[in-house]
Amino acid sequence: MKDILEYTSYRQYIADYYAEKKAKTAFTWQEFTRAAGFSSPVHLKYASEGRLNLSDAAALRVAKAMHLVDFEQEYFCEMVKFDNAKTDSEKKDAFGKMLSIAEAHKAKILEGDSYRYFESWKNPVLRELAPAMPGAKPLALAKACRPEITAAEVSESLNFLVKADLLHKDKDGNYVQTERGVTTGPLDVTPVAIRGMHRQMGEFALDAIEGVAQDERHFSGLTLGITRKAYEDIVQEIAEFRKRIIAIATREDGTDEVYRLNVQFFPMTKKSINKKA
Image (cartoon, rainbow, N blue to C red; front, side, top):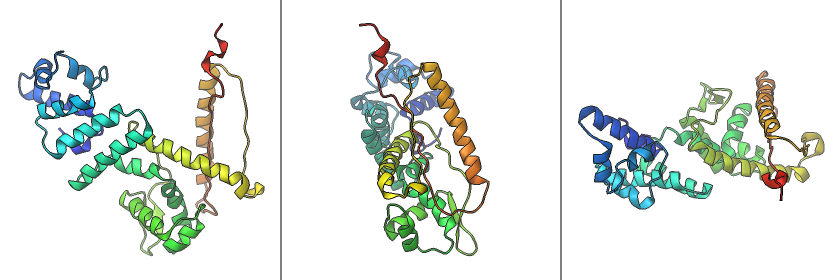
């Protein structure tokens, strides 16, 4: 069984803990659940399957039932808080505490790099910009960004990108991408950061309407009345369109400028419009 600091899902941790104990002893869900103070003999089994949730108050009892101590208990409780969080802000706070606990004990959450990459617009921009400006110092890179940032922010981002193996330095000290593309990674943590990035990029798009010359940016939109089937077909078409855009962007090695493409498709009415009064 992996160390608890390698988990981001308390449900998976419970399932793995039970499987390991069951493989070695006559351990039962009823025994496990009773030790955690639940009256239902299947409460933890259902929690591991996603059919029931653990409350924040119950998290510590379960952690103790699994003989977790000190920072392990704290980490498990933060996993429960992350799962129970209703807003991105709450999820971000819980996951940030998970990262802090892991780092304090010299461990690495496998999804942490993916989360941090998408947490700030600076990371994807500098991942594209630094290789396009060989030999450039952090101050020059900072001034090339829109909006302009500080040299310290550039250095922090570049250090992370190298550490996460998203960039590396060649023999001449220039930054090179390790891969042409970056995927969104695991689906339970990363979307929290991606939603934050969408908000950041949406604000930049608004600024670009007035702040960027019309011949250097393109804005267009459609308002459509559609069915659910049409929605699904359009989403698939957008996915294929994005693949074609990536193919166009990556068929040449050079970079003149770093652009952002936002593809937004969202409802402007409520589902109830077709319901009879």
